[in-house]
Image (cartoon, rainbow, N blue to C red; front, side, top):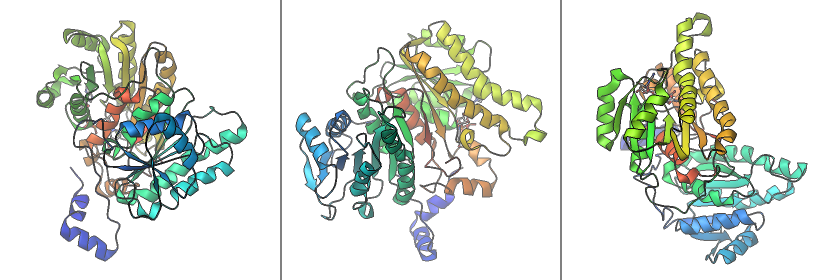
Length: 475
Ligand code: NAD
């Protein structure tokens, strides 16, 4: 397991060889070393722009200030007045920055929610164009736009619809040095939840997330976007299925890092591996095949023993049984459909029926870019992973009324036993064909799941976020 080429490239011999051959060197991503910190942007220059003053840029300015960033507005570019007005209102200091003054920024945030026409989009060009030759390695770019339908005219809707294409292209241009570029689409009235999403996208916790669009639509009933607190999952009970190894084990570790008590679930045959994983994080070992008819009820009972209802459930357990559809035996179809999809739906239904979820619970399902792009030999698997995306979308509205949020994470190529089994050439292509030219690590998925499970994502519901280094498969 592991990416030997990436290791070699970053050795001194490897770097020389790659440079001599003129081959692109995959960037060394800067990942988080520990839990979320309040002043996560302390020492970072953040350039902010806005196409016009308004609530959303006010929220951006306040959030960056709360994170400890040094705020800058561009002396020579558009967006100056909008930011200055927001900063004056929030009593936050901003300094002027020249594109060529030799002190580059590490974070770039442009609020384009005010753009009402194609002509207004010129502000984006003016903001980014003079800076892009000097973006430091592992920088963060975030654009804020409106969610689909949250506009007053066709012209405005059309202008806002430009942003996904813009950000996906900018991410492809910027990934060479580990820089990420993502779009937050904010609904009018949900501006208070921008800070949480910014904390994720502007931090090393999102090192493998780039070229993505995240709608911030507002919190479920009774949930308020709260100010940052360290270890926000303290006192929460989190169930993780498939937690013995791979991505699930990493999810369990990162949830525990942020304070959660984790109940790790895996097949009874994997109890000893699960035990070792849980021992490291003080978690609870729950040997259970999640396809059992009453698995949801059993999980509720285990959570009750630990003192309460389930605050977080991560439906991570998943299997592949690859065969071309023409050669696939019916039991392989049924097995994959039941583990990856049927068990999730059944479990949630049972938990909802018996009040097994705590108020304001958060459900996170694991999809896959295979469910978006499709894969020869994976009709069964891709059907389930595509269905998961539809499921979270369909359930979000109903659950929001109960105070519960449901979202999905769609991993790309991640270095695990599942991907180690892929034939070597296919594996190498899948790894490199991305904006960051490498596969992700289980911790990259764990970080995104933990974001979705935490109050940082209070305004996110019904969304699927791809964590794939902007893999071209499924782009
Ligand atoms: P993995 O095979 O390493 O781990 C999956 C875990 O789920 C195992 O511990 C397994 O025992 C457990 N499991 C399987 N069936 C179960 C059942 N019936 N009851 C309880 N536990 C069960 O896989 P992984 O690579 O860590 O994948 C985790 C999730 O991420 C899966 O849903 C997978 O589809 C998804 N995913 C992975 C990748 C990747 O690149 N590895 C890409 C996209 C999506």
